[in-house]
Length: 290
Ligand code: NAP
Figure 1: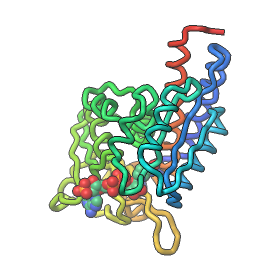
Figure 2: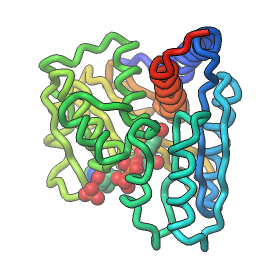
Figure 3: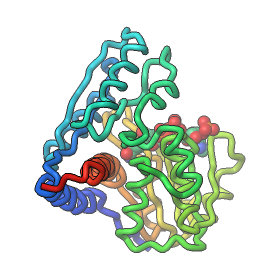
Figure 4: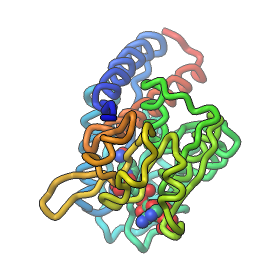
């Protein structure tokens, strides 16, 4: 069996076209232009690149973006003050603090300073709690993107065995909750899981977000499984790869996402979707249609 390759770039392109339509209709109906504020602390090269991609996506879709750069030495209180100003700014519908933050920062204090109504990354405790109850304000972007890819491929989840490898707060755990909400039987594995293969072999749908190249090899995958590779790893030769041995596993899976070109483009796109959703809510709240 050779797997169908799920084209995240194409799916993201379609969703972005829909985003542009939503932005136009929002402007026509309420005179509102969606706004996204992005805060960067320090100059982590990967973060700089991620922010550039996000700002470029904003431009492409018609979202107004506001960028705030702080030196790595900045006092955390100054960042919190900036967030509070943005919370009150009616032109800003989404606030994003690029992670990781410097080690000296209290991550939770920063994330919880963001207004729940503008938490487009979905990392605030309230949003995370909402995930547990199946009712978020904003689904976190990467797992949201994976769900959209699965929906696009018409991959049914009800009653399916789903194994999520990785249990981080921003990918693995919310991913597991979102799939459970869709009536899958979900198992979460992490670095201390003994004999990872005994779990991955059970998966009808295998989602991998661990940050280790070739963590998943063909012997760990059931024939016909759907494999979603969230991992992004830069090899010493500069090549970008996921967590899955793509060439080997594609001979066993029924569908597989490539890296790059799979989940990555969806993450940025779902950030755009969340920002527009926020602006639409603000437009409806203002109640003043043009
Ligand atoms: P993270 O915070 O480092 O978490 C990694 C998770 O994987 C942890 O739960 C860890 O277990 C688990 N893990 C590590 N080694 C493992 C192993 N050998 N076997 C099983 N589980 C293992 O990373 P993250 O932020 O979730 O990101 C994970 C990967 O996804 C990274 O490559 C990252 O670059 C990528 N990513 C991609 C996107 C995208 O848009 N495509 C977005 C976000 C992240 P413990 O909890 O036990 O430590």
